[in-house]
View 1 (cartoon, rainbow, N blue to C red):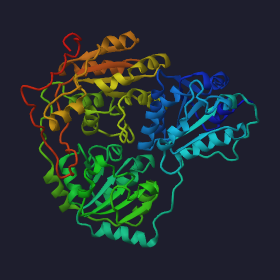
View 2: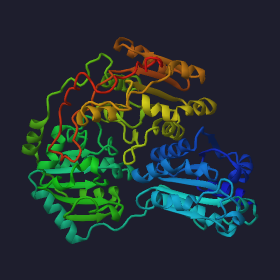
View 3: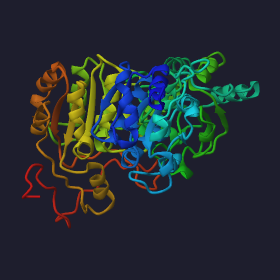
View 4: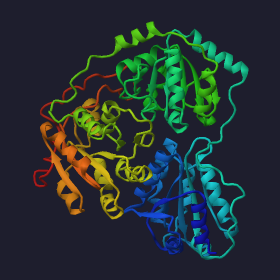
Length: 573
């Protein structure tokens, strides 16, 4: 069979049901073969970046590699942001790109780009397949690498003439289950004695849970450990939902926009058990001042992450579920009542964050209520991302999706497509700001053509809100290039064939969301929120977790830069 058919056969053998892509010259043989493989449903995106984000969303929702496809040159380079996003957040993904024929490699042929060279720093593995005899093996290998250890993206670049060549397809001797990561060993007996002794003797212990807990399916083990030991648990942005909202041991989210009592607990802890997280800078603040009183036990499936950002007393390269399950067999019950009382005393009194009646907190609670608490929520990047993380009542494990490490604006809508297709029948909301939504709003056409029932929420404040907040707090209130004009999103949605509605008053919120939830198919709701609301608390640049700002200085008046343009009127802008 042709190389293009071999690609399809490998995808079928790996259990792929959906792939996201955009055709072009160098990948055309694959698209010619694709209709002969009806088990593979191709989703035609409107931009290749969306294909990568959608495959990322699929991977996060299933634990199996999402698949995206692009042609050479600009098609391949448009995948780069999505590949980097998947790499930073540990999301399994396989990208297949077409390449110019082998005879033209290195000759600056039309739409030739060395995508393997570009992708090497932002993927787990990238390979150019120049021998059709190796094609099937390299593709099967890509699926294995994508899930081995810490998941991530893999790119396979295939010249057009290799897709057109003919060879026999030889199935792999034994199919590797995509969701079974390769793990290193459990701690030694000596290490176990050290771990249990540190946790038993600690007066102020904490557990920091990252996305690795969710990827390993270790939510139950984490909950049992927290309940047995009464050790408070802190969940990172990507670790949210590892414990459900309201769990008595859950403190909240740490870091730049974490609550004051959470960050103070970290700074006063004497032992920290970090499981499945990278200790990135948005969690730690200035690392020189991070948890200076704590001995850190760092458990992560990726050995290279251990000790990379913060010094650790003990590092264990192991899958989170395997580690926590084994720890439960060794860890005796204990009490942390005094420590918990101290942390609770630091909890700040609930402050009014929003002056307007249509507060993001109220919107998020209403979305949760209308979905019966079953919604999968995909957040874009910006202020609304933090509001979603802090104010949505997380109850379902692995129901929160966001671009954490890369912080890629435009992530929400395409990633939500992948989540919705991976979890048919479950409600999916893509929540964006007016800036991020405009980066990939063309994917409304994909939602319509492919009948993907994603609900779209646009938080419109007329600004690039997070940048504006920093300008207010640290740049003297000079709002340079952050006021952003928007189209009428309700009318735009209707132009795409999607029901669109604008909400300006809190009194209309419940009725509109009830109607949106009942809508068969995608719909868009635009929320006209307060223009200059801020996400608080926040850690200033270069600050430690002890330096949280609980208010932002008022903007000087008169302002040296123009005020935000009216959200609709071009002339006024």
